Length: 239
Image (cartoon, rainbow, N blue to C red; front, side):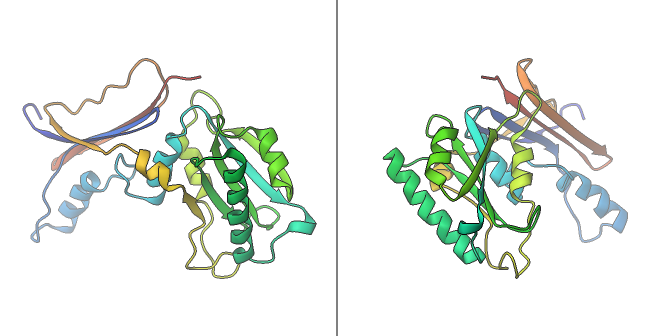
């Protein structure tokens, strides 16, 4: 592959960097089933992507914008405040969001999910906030409908934002507990605006450099007679 031109995409989001490099084959209507399958191993690799290809990809990048200074909250309801429906749980969230805005006195970044199917099958909320905006003590004071559990968004070196993204998106709509037409996970528009544009460029090498100071990292590669694909992600620094 010496002298070949690799097509590269790099996406940055807070301390997270995701990059892929590929020698991409062209599909042809004359491809055999084997040839098409081999080419798709390069064109559609079975790993997370540096571009916003899936819901998990998109949420992972927004969570990465919280960096090393975010907390993951689980807000549960006591019996007196337990919502009777998903619609009611949505209304509770909207009222709580207004309360948070009034308390802080300015806009802030957030990501949240409404769940109700796993565990003890009671509606509850997952919420990600910046530590500099709200403390766990403030959340417990403001919630007032039950209990608040908190943990760091990144649990330590070796953890990833993708773990939390998968967790927040684990529940599928079922038409009963969670209506089919509802998005269970959303985030503030400010996170969309803060996400840098992906960088598209060409290179003579497929090597992706991961800095020595990266606290979390992962890599994937595949090669065949039709092309090659390289993917790497890493999280820089620590508190």
